[in-house]
Image 1 (cartoon, rainbow, N blue to C red):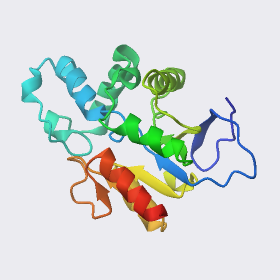
Image 2 (cartoon, rainbow, N blue to C red; image 1 turned 135 degrees about the vertical axis):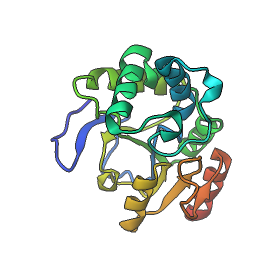
Image 3 (tube, rainbow, N blue to C red; image 1 turned 90 degrees about the vertical axis):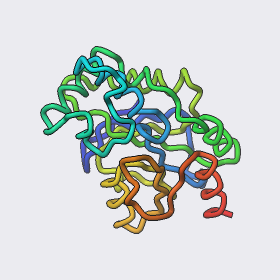
Image 4 (tube, rainbow, N blue to C red; image 1 turned 120 degrees about the vertical axis):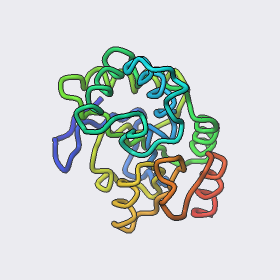
Length: 211
């Protein structure tokens, strides 16, 4: 693990595999929550416990910020998120989104370099727990990666193609002219193509972009 200066929003960078200056692989920047890990499915379970409501009352169709579950401000969201991470190990207990492991392995085997880019360090004083849960989840589910970046400003992480579900991040990345595939879910239906509704479609798009 190597720490780098806290510049341009970078908090932590982990190199899993060594690389050299001659390495010219195509880099795929991959988000975790909502792209590889079923963030909304697990948060729905935890929110049902937190709000003491039957899970059936919490919609599967949510927007960014989870207002459909009765969350009306950032403070409420932060409280739920803090409970989820610190008391229910959110980042190590999510299910894998179908196809993520299969197609990331296939891309890795074909020579693409997988760079995980996630913004999970926004809860003060719980960074160690977030990092450990993330690494445990990636390793226990066999998700291949070369680099793991904990960072808010994803536009400042180098990659040739990005896979992202956050509407704000997609707009920022595309606004910088960066090739970005929107991984579709209920929070981003208004985002235009290129879109993928499954990891099979992601793989086909990357093959087309780089063929």
